[in-house]
Length: 353
Image (cartoon, rainbow, N blue to C red; front, side, top):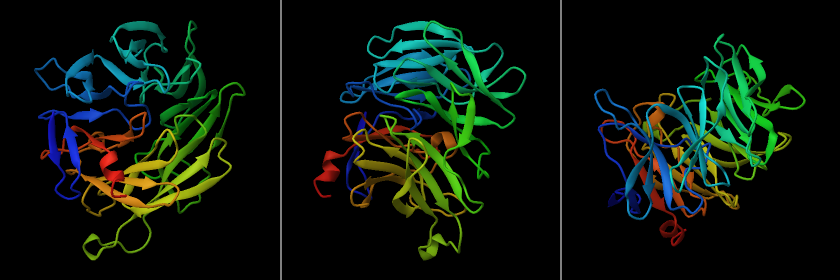
């Protein structure tokens, strides 16, 4: 672990990894920390000729790093409430991982011949859900209930991704139509028991919606609404606007919680008082990349950590809060554009807020 002072913001940051491989935090749409905030989890890229890729945990205070799973496992994600992680081996075998002991227990199998198209997610009942590419190349949503066989609850010709079961309602699965860009209607909600799907945020033709995440208690979602319209020139101080929209669970009411230049991936603290997002170069506009903290009550935003520029989407900063809400974990691209995991303690930020 290296402790350095950010050259732009002046805040102290802890960096836990270095290349040459990518070391990227878990995606922002799941918890990244153990329930006691002692450890965070990240994925180490498997390079040719090596055998050290997989999911690792890092001790936040000491920097000690231990491997949790090897590179044959994918889709690792942590439970919103329990001290458990979920992962898939050989595309279909689902395992629960004790985050304290690293002990693994097989809990079931996904449909044969397919593969997940994101990470696993779990509701507070233990139901696991994911978006899936079936062996016949049809996309699907799949649920795995404790002690039962996995079942396909929805099929589609569209490429499905970013599936997130509601943390407190096992009947609702949020998912998207993945275009790797804009979509006519990106966000959808599946009612498992009723067997129907509906748009979540209903888009107008001029809107660009992207990067959605449940709050930990499942009462609301944060969505990024990009505003690519109009003249944009970074050298002249003109930038695209990233609008963080907060919608209720049913998708009936949405509010703009923040509007800042070049935001992309939003996240909500567990107490709902704070938002964070990465500031990224995109749509042809180059900025100083990094992490922004936003106070929901006032809309005040502050650039708190600068980073390098991302080489790929997997190297995006994807910031997210620890469970207590006083630290932010993010990926900081190194000189080669490969993400390396860092933590910033927010108590130093709040002192001069």
